[in-house]
Structures are given as C-alpha cells and as structure tokens.
Amino acid sequence: AQSVAQPEDQVNVAEGNPLTVKCTYSVSGNPYLFWYVQYPNRGLQFLLKYITGDNLVKGSYGFEAEFNKSQTSFHLKKPSALVSDSALYFCAVLSSGGYQKVTFGIGTKLQVIP
Amino acid sequence: DGGITQSPKYLFRKEGQNVTLSCEQNLNHDAMYWYRQDPGQGLRLIYYSQIVNDFQKGDIAEGYSVSREKKESFPLTVTSAQKNPTAFYLCASSIKGARTEAFFGQGTRLTVV
Image: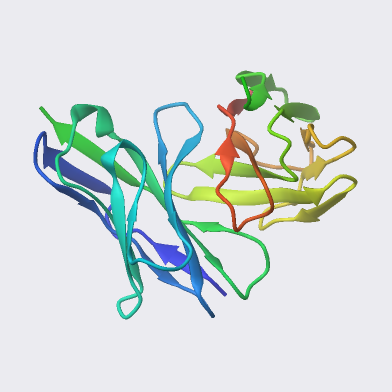
C-alpha cells in the first residue's frame, strides 16, 4: 500500500518570507514523488518530481523540494513567497515496485499575505 | 498548441440521466486518467488507461464507465448508478504511465439538479 499525508490544511505566509508546505509518504520500495499546484477552478499543474539522485529537486516558478528518506518526507519550499503563489498544492507518491497508480494527498491551501 | 482539453466546463445532470464528459489530448501520450475531486478529499482515481483499447478501474469506478478507442480520446460516462456525482472531474495524461508527470485538463464541474 502507498499513502501520502499533507498535515496542514492551510499555510499562511507573508509575502517575501520563505514558505514550506509539508508532505510525508509511505510506500513499499523506493518512491517517486511529485508536487502539483492548482489554481481555483483549474486543473493541476506539475511543479517538480523526485525519482532518484540529488535530494534537493528544483522545479517551476522558483519552487524546490527536499527528499528525506529517513523521515519519509518531501517538503515543498520557496525562499521568497509571492502573492501569486496562493493556490492549492498537492503532493503525490508512487511506489517504484507497486502497480502503476499515483496516490495524491488531500492538498494544502497556501495563502500568501501581502 | 499541445494540451489536454476537457468539455464541457460546466455540466448539469438530472436524476437518472447518464452524461458523458469529453477528454481529448494532442500530446501523443499513451496513458490517460480520470480523477474526481471533492473538497477535503484530494483527487481520487476513477479509471485509467495505459494503451488504446485497454483500461483499468481505479479506486472509485462504481457508477462510471470509460472507453479508449483512440489514443487521443478518453471519454468518461457518469451513469445513473453513481449516487453522488456532483464533483469536479479532472482528466490527465502522461507520456508513459504513472512514473512520468501528468498533464491535466481544466476540469468539468458536474452538478446534479
């Protein structure tokens, strides 16, 4: 079985401050990990993914995520938040040894305050 | 422009009706997916297809049906057997299955009236 948890329903951060959106996962085998962003009434957009290699993954719009195997985490980060970053963020996981189905978290709403 | 197109954007269904949601992609992707999104529940997989003329049930397939007669198209039918169909439906595609990132359509909001 595979699962992903996003422990915060909402994260509030002031514009210009660093932001972190948390994600932890559980899989058997090695994980493939993804972050997506969703703006209101729109589809999801891919931000970044971890497959293997460097634990720090850089993605679109200045976002990055750090893979931590011992803590089974894949937190999304950005050094300086923009008001336009306000959206719903989804973490997703797939086991490398499992059947081909991605499991999504329930999403974290990011609110960047001007 | 390459992309994935869902239509219609808004759809209203009467009780006992079947409705079909369209999903078309011109990305030449092999895999296609249908998800249902409800507030506070994230995305749940309804059906997925990794190749033409083949598809598998996801986690919540009951009350839904799909077909994959062409690589570009993956329509979803919400049947009258689906007791709570009001939701936001998202179609997605990926190059080669779940290990590659997915590209999503803009969604269809289905409401039962």
